[in-house]
Structures are given as structure tokens and as C-alpha cells.
Image (cartoon, rainbow, N blue to C red; front, side):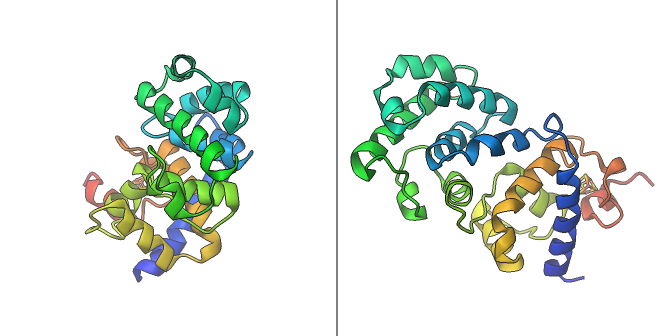
Length: 224
Ligand code: SF4
């Protein structure tokens, strides 16, 4: 089977699995509610989610955005207060500086509206391609693929669809070239939920995975 056909088949199975997962098993589902509320919510929540567990990010982002629902409010909040709210997250001091600076730039340079191009989003501190692409899809409905550690691991190391990938952009390009555009945005959520619940970074649950018969990683690690 060629990589494109295998990819589409695997993703359609994972989509079904994702749809049946609970928020406890796949906390990425919690994030959808915050990320799709407004472009500002999407940007701040996604910036906070870097190297943090979704269930913690969800609570912290909800508290911050309840207190500062607009870029103006977040720009005006003292840095120490933002740090206090973000404390449960890793790198909270750096994240506090980044979200405050982003909010102030949105107010001063963009008239209070989050910009909607990859190039502009990448100029914000704390926003890389993954964050920018997730924001473009969740906030503006633009076709974009966010590649995080779950997506990268599953495509490269578990399904071995792109074993020579060197960086997330390689996987991003591969997914865009081999999936229909209408799936680009959601594939991140499907694979992240699947990675959180089943194809975990350590000790993947191959014994209960519907893909185990066709998965190269499962074949390699199966007991004789
Ligand atoms: S069989 Fe194992 S490694 Fe392969 S996709 Fe399923 S959980 Fe991941």
C-alpha cells in the first residue's frame, strides 16, 4: 500500500477512535472549547499549551481569559498577576511575558484584532509554526496543519510513513500533500487525542489498538 493510501486509512480509523474518546482520556477535546471561542482565546490558549498538559492548560487559560477576555485587558494586567495565574504551567514566567507582549502588540499594531496570516503570527514571541497553524485553523478556519510531538511521533516513528523526517515541517508538508485540504485542521486533534489515549509516548497501548495488525511499530515490538 502506498504512503498516501496508508495515511488516509490510518487517519480515518483514528478519527473514529477520537470521536469515541472521553475528555478524561483525550484532554485535547477540552481545549477545543476554549480555542474556538475567539481568535484571541485561540492564540493565548495555544501559546500557553506549549510543553504543558492539556488538562492543566485548559484550567489556567480559562482562569486567565475570564479575568482578561480581551487583548486590552490582558495588556493592562500587571505581569506579576499574570505570572501568578500561569504558575501551574511550565515556563510560566516566559509565557506570562509572551502573552502580555502579544496582547499589547495586538492592541497597538493590529487595532485589537489577532492577525490572520502565518507570517504575521510568526512575528509574535512564543509563536512557532505549530501554534500559528493551530490558530489559523481554530480561529479563522484556514486550512493549516499543526504538528506537535504527538503528530510527529505517530507519523514518523509509529506508522513510519516518513521515517527520514528531520523536523516538524517535513511532517507538516507530508500531511498537506497527502490529505484532502478539509482534513488539514482536524488531523492535529485526531492524532493528539489518539496519542494521549492510546498511541502514548511511552508504553503505547498496542494490545487494544485497532491498527495493531497494520502498524509497523507494533510489528517490530510484538512478542514472538
Ligand atoms: S499499534 Fe501501537 S504503535 Fe501502532 S498506532 Fe496503535 S498504539 Fe500506536
